[in-house]
Image (cartoon, rainbow, N blue to C red; front, side, top):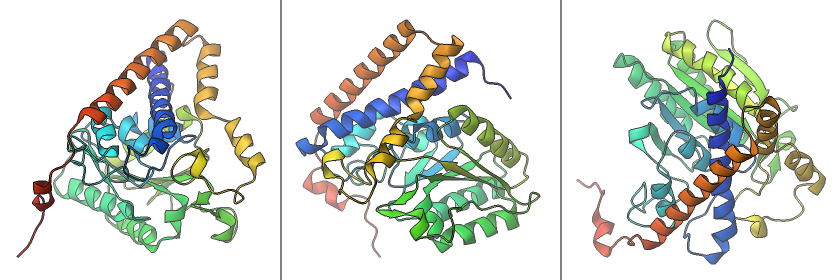
Length: 323
């Protein structure tokens, strides 16, 4: 299928928005106003943007600790996200969760889990719930290559294939699980999981190509809507920054600087922007206008977060369950 010019501009804007938000967080993180660990999505923007562009508002996503991109691409409120990073009561999780526990149920973001692989069975369960309730909804699960080491992935895939659940498993393979490269954790350089075609639609693609991500996910989502079962998509990509925090906090020595630079040159945002300029889909004036709008939105979100109230002592007793 071919994307319209409007759809391409939408993909680029989502990628730019995610990138600029991440850059602002990174630049201000050492001020210590954001009282939460952060795991930034710089370098992986094409995946969240391409996947979520295929989804409807009521379709669900589950995510992991590196969830800012997924949250924003699915329509999550930026002000509420920033307030959550500042641990304010106006945050999307009311200040209880921080960066690794974002949620926006209204837009189908059913929450994120900081447990490696923790969102996989939850997303599978959502697919089961949609099927049992005969709802025309799809569940998408985002997880990293480190989660491919967890048994819960195989249990979930098996169950989803058995029950033909409307679940799309999206693995963002950025080559690193914290400081451990794939080759130290897997036999060979392939963590791609391919099932029988009639039970599991599967693909291994370039996760830095937003149009390819969109087209592949579109097939998977349409298959799920028809009741044809789950899909597994491995998107190869790279996290430009470290596992957590900002550049200044990234441990030295575990990655070759040349590797980082090589992937930086393959920046998905820059590459897609250049592609659309060359195609005449966007021009310098439109890009400048988009950048100005995004900057203004980010400024407003940070101001909102800083001005929002902190949780009170009374809030400690909210959302507790006891017999």
